[in-house]
Image 1 (cartoon, rainbow, N blue to C red):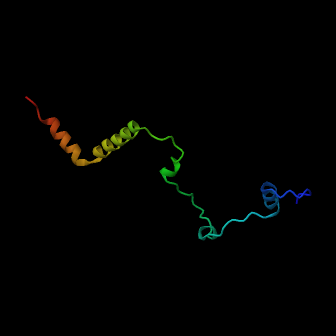
Image 2: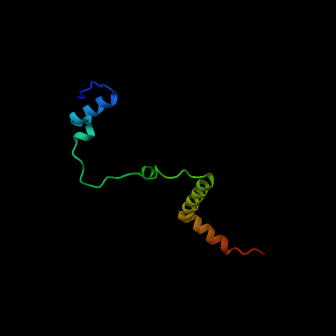
Image 3: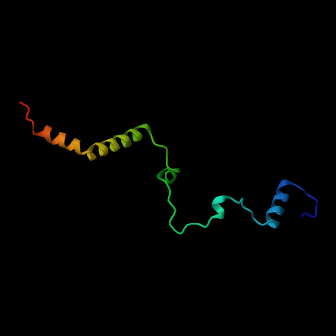
Length: 89
């Protein structure tokens, strides 16, 4: 260790880190073989470091999704087509 007898936390930590081998806790997932397929990650994890959205951006995003959902419903298209055929006098 240090010949001057300095037993500060920094000296002890550097000594331990230089002499000890790195150890990791043994868990069930670490003991299993890693899969060869690509790992999947959710969109929430990918966007974890994203900038927080403003209320306007959240509202715009939800309205876009509602419109896309409504347009995907077949009954909506039939009603919209039949309404366009009705003539207003």
